[in-house]
Image (cartoon, rainbow over all chains, first blue to last red; front, side):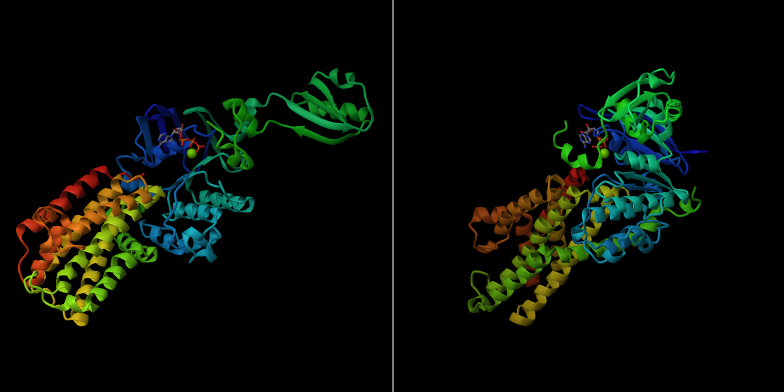
Length: 315
Length: 260
Ligand SMILES: Nc1ncnc2c1ncn2[C@@H]1O[C@H](COP(=O)(O)OP(=O)(O)OP(=O)(O)O)[C@@H](O)[C@H]1O
Ligand SMILES: [Mg+2]
């Protein structure tokens, strides 16, 4: 498969702040490629270099064979960008905005259909300033897609959307991809990355920490499984600690927590069954993408609830 | 990969978009209300008030036989140009930058330069309409004769608009926010209108002030307009002063304009 986006040894500083410190990756045609990383990691700077909005200090970028700086005019026809923040005039109506932006392109999408898909049909004559945050976000996604781009770069796609709108947007992105559009997705949400992305570049302090599939990333940190249950009757720990697949057994109140390798679950359940012990509320915890994120960057990803509260305090 | 992509040059496709962009900016200009109210409505109201003052319709010796109203018609025209160029335009453009609208346009084939073009086109168009309305109301309502040197009058109007819009672009280029742009525009507005003779007609200014007035864009504009109204072709110096402001501030704005 040909690479649609090729980034090699990208560097970009703002004065003394090194925002991107040697980033390389390539995105294949038709792929949904995620860029994941903590705040200030350099995600936005990276994609803005890809979009041609920022001039790299060093490094090579090619998008659909075009140089984002030299071939800007052509690139804007084929690449749709959703910027992390960006408003519209407060008195511009939704339908007007879509009609206007679609008129910029050689082969635009049907903006009315797009407006329907994004649930904005009944807002067509509402002014931008009167839209809710989520509606503004959906309009911004629509504007990124209205030019019928071959590549869409979406920075913080679903920030500010409610869970239903977020799922609808994921569906839309999958539909867009199934039409062969290559998508680069900058996100903070693990669930989003896990559900949508074929591959993820994990970026921290301006560097690529790992590029892999979501499953591949979690496998890297998947050293132990944790099994929790409430035994129906008390039992001797040695019953389990004697198993070769189990590394430890701890009691937390009524709950027993067993850690071990990926065979541990089989071994534990069969021993319990043989001894007529019922394991109530049996739960197996596996490493998630979030664990991979924490292990690889040493930081906790922002969850949706924490996003707004934790931002002011961060440095 | 799309085969049609390289079939036609980008410019061909963006030209219809430019028309739509200009129409959209005109709609927003009207909805924004600052321009229509202060740039068109207010000068018209002043014209009606001045026209209704009995003594303003009498020929004055000081003005070489012209009426006070005739002296004020060009002042009201530049008043309107000044409001559009120094208040409405910088506020809109700096606001667009602040809101990231110019950056968003950078990601589209339209590009932010064409937005500036559209904004200038809207302001020129509104200026032309406003000048015609003022001249017609003054003629029909208060018997003020239409300019006798029409071509000279038109050229003076367009040069005055070009000079002031260039200053407005410069303010938009250098101001950090929409609010700052509006503040700077307002600070520039009052001295410029003073030297245009809003409070004291240029002919009645002390020599030094009159001398300064000749060097300001609106002072030169008012003189050129008054001369053309009476039938003279504008002095080269007046046209050159306006052209110099247009070129100098236009170039400075082009050099300093930031899209973010
Ligand atoms: N225009 C700018 N001028 C100066 N510094 C900037 C600018 N934009 C970003 N930075 C700095 O560059 C670094 C990377 O910023 P960037 O916006 O690329 O991060 P990000 O990964 O997108 O973060 P977030 O998840 O918060 O959106 C940060 O330290 C930021 O403060
Ligand atoms: Mg960002």
